[in-house]
Structure formats: structure tokens, C-alpha cells
Length: 171
View 1 (tube, rainbow, N blue to C red):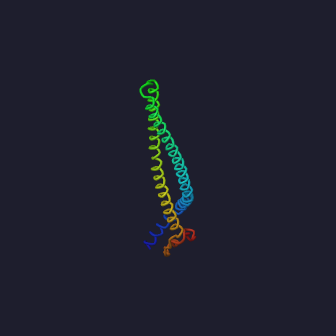
View 2: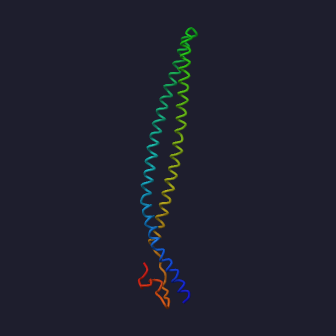
């Protein structure tokens, strides 16, 4: 009798938790529904960023080729002019310096864009983690939907643990 009363008390406490568990279940269902959309959006952002990065790197390659060509032209001009045209040689040195600085800036941009690749890898990792959590939540939902069966235990002065105080069976 004492055990049944204790069991009934535990059941009453657990029944009080049912509305909370229902709210948690609804929240999990809503969350699992939005996770695939978030993963898709992350993938779309990653793809767009990768495409932009590739385009920028291709443009930098073309710029670097043109700078190299211009530098080669300057070397030829300096050789043809010799030391006779000192003012022109000075201008050519300025142009050469500007081209070298522009090449360095292009290389700095290319190096900075390498961060995008690392970011893409991190986003892919986060997306995988989100999907893993989603699968775990779906598993929990499946277990919540199954429910648990308990054998009846009738207390002498109250309802069985399958019924509440009004004699209505627990869901």
C-alpha cells in the first residue's frame, strides 16, 4: 500500500510535467523544421562567397599578368634609352615602383581571400553539426511519441496510477 501511494505520488508529479514536455516537444518540432532551411541558406551563402572569391582571384591573376607585362616593357625602355635620358629614366623608375606596389597589393588581396576558404570549411562544419543535432532531436521526438506503458497499481484510497483523481485515464 505504501509503495502504491509512493508510486501514485511520483505519477502525479510526472503528470504535472506532461504539459511542459508537450511544449518542449512542440518547440523541438518547430526547430527541426527550420534547421534544413538554415543549412540550405548557409550552403547558398558559402557557394555565393566561393564564386565571388574565384572571380576576384581570376581578376587578380589577370592584373598580375598585365603588371608583369608592363614591368617587362619598362625594362626594355630603360635599356633602349640608356643613360642619355635621365629625366625619363626617373619617370620609368617611378612607374616601376608603382607597378611593384600594385603587384604587392594584388598579392595581399589574394592572401586575404584565402580566409574565405577557411570560412567555407568552418561553415560546412557548422552545417554538419546542425544536421547532427537535428537528427538527434528527431530521435528524441520519436521516443516522445512512443510513450511508456506502466502496469496498473491500485491504491486502496485512490485511483490507479493509470487514472487521475477524476478517474480519467492518463494519456
